[in-house]
Length: 261
Image (tube, rainbow, N blue to C red; front, side, top):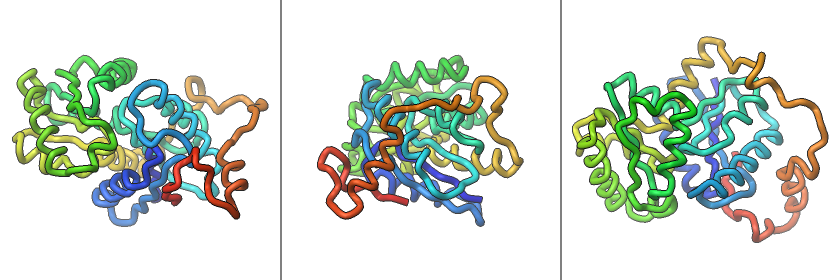
């Protein structure tokens, strides 16, 4: 089985961290491939960057030249998953719903610890749309920017633990790490808190294995039917970008650290 894990931002070091977490939990025989878009924001902290990222991810997916059995979208609370479900004929899972679904199997209520406070409404909206908000005891921001998560692992863990304690006091019995950039921290945070901590990347990979292993995929009869054929101007951009940079440095407006496949 081959699972593609898509980091929605263009920071290659974060892709590497996400890849490591996904690989660590994957079953024997499961191949993890991780990448990010060829263009878009280096981190996603708001609706504007979220919608740019969604377009960049869908653009990237249209230009991949290999097959895979499931897609994991590693953005927490961000748009684009539904578009990928229309585009692909394999299961598509995102880390927001996967984390919450797994958390609800482990306790009566769960909470989410994320990055900046401005991300909280976006995550709550995503959980509400998915029908998962009723059992959420709270969503809290740590005050850390997405890129700050990688600067000092000890400080990041300490702040996540401090914030998670507040969510536990609010009634959460399970904590979800609310950012793909927090991948790999679940064991340390759980040891400090004494409650289960779910990493969305790990949860989504295990769900992807289960769904693909059962031979299931997204229903295409209505909500996620394939896109209707039509002209889309200058699309996909990734193809043009790849051709224009084949023998020259990448345009400075785009990430120079894209990890590729």
